[in-house]
Length: 237
Image 1 (cartoon, rainbow, N blue to C red):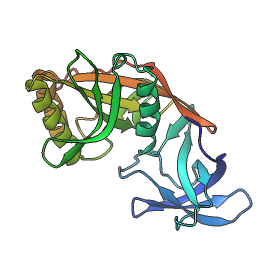
Image 2 (image 1 turned 180 degrees about the vertical axis):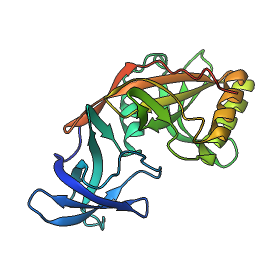
Image 3 (image 1 turned 90 degrees about the horizontal axis):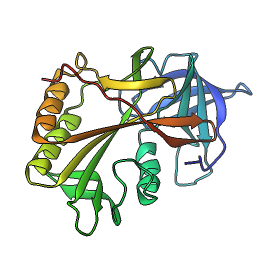
């Protein structure tokens, strides 16, 4: 998926209030950018890091820049957590997601569970419905290894429990982790950060929830679905 507007480089001054970041443009001007990421962004929001912004001239938006990428040693990381669903929708509709191809309809944001919405409901003649929940993975504390989550996520644990119920009721339930880094070749769970999520994951797996994991190809031009990556959680309880 290409960015709608060419990205411009900048230097991060600080991230604050979760959704705001002050940055310095190459001409020296300081501006505030929207940060579409509710997580901790551990290791991705240190002052002085080189970031990439998407400008906009939408009069409805108060902030004229959106923070999309950050450079790390050896690669790029996508920090916009709304981007994976937009990219995956196009890939799902094109039948380009291995393991999730062959469905006739791709329905985003469908109600299910208790006050929740599934990211994608896939339907096809003669096939069980597939409920697909998507999580953006940006944390990496060891070379080549991506981890989820980067902070405690009660909402994420709730989604796993609801997927478990879906699987127990006979539909297909899929947890899809999208690694928005091009410096990682495998992924796992950060159980030390959120033990409750790790526990919910183990329960979901025992209930029949499937796990898929994909990487991303990331450049300042855009972000595209990459190859399938191994997802190893040997200590899931």
